[in-house]
Length: 147
Image 1 (spheres, helix red, strand yellow):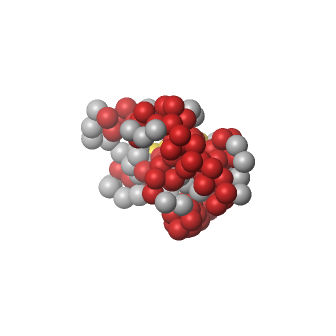
Image 2 (cartoon, one colour):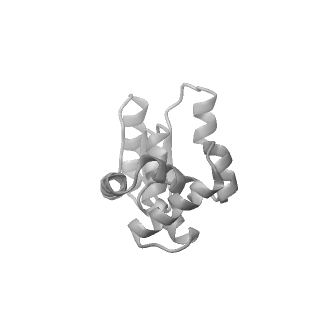
Image 3 (cartoon, helix red, strand yellow):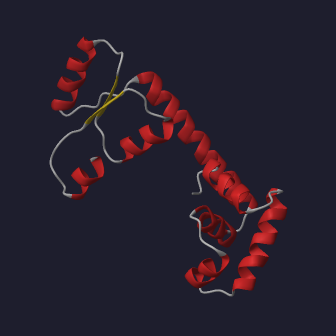
């Protein structure tokens, strides 16, 4: 719903009301421009404060969940830099495409390279990261914020 609001460029502020939200979902919501987040179980008076704050142009971010999400984002960014230190730009690109579920042939077509070249890159990536198989690479990409 938030994506659609942003796509249509509606001039509204959004407060996200949720029972449970993981770090990734909260980061995504904030990236989409959510102005406030309120979780089930918080005091009702806080909801009123949240709405008033957001209505007046401010932001209302629940501290614990937002802090945890920020820690997660910082860790993911550090992991992304760590991956970039180990892998070449092309290898990172191929790992991202593996995480998207593309096969070697599809990757080769997308990158305008030979399928054999994709296999060579994957072999080198597997050696550098000590990972075996596409699933392991996809999990690595997700964990390191590459996917």
